[in-house]
Length: 167
Ligand SMILES: [Zn+2]
Image 1 (cartoon, rainbow, N blue to C red):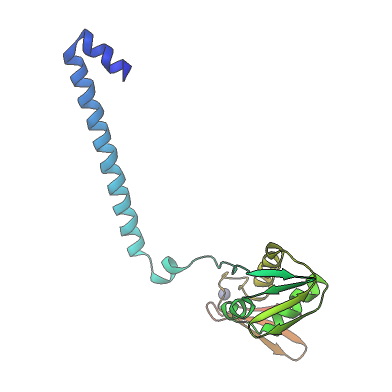
Image 2: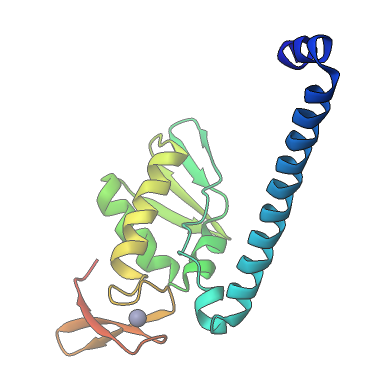
């Protein structure tokens, strides 16, 4: 601002020129932004639907509270539904990792002991990586099947069959 003001006083014509140039640049910048957005939109619309819809699987948030020496996960049933896993399977994994006992009551899980929700969340994330997400295509559309002594994670998206451990 001070710079333009100085020039204005010395030579009004050059001020106008610089000012006009400045405006031109900002208009160009704006046009570039718009066309970049358009380009992105066009590129996205040309992608196969499957690719554009694919998002990295996000571990569900844990809603929990501690009452006395117990921790209640209020949305345990919801989490199991989202992961498409049996509540007993996830509960077994969690109680092993947390070295405690737990039970399911309605849609809630009740653990013996005090546990922060972020700790439970991190464990669920590990569970998801090991027992839900396909190691080949990273999608969560999988199911667990047992064959003789072995357990497999079958991916419904890419067809991969990966051997997994028992919880
Ligand atoms: Zn897969």
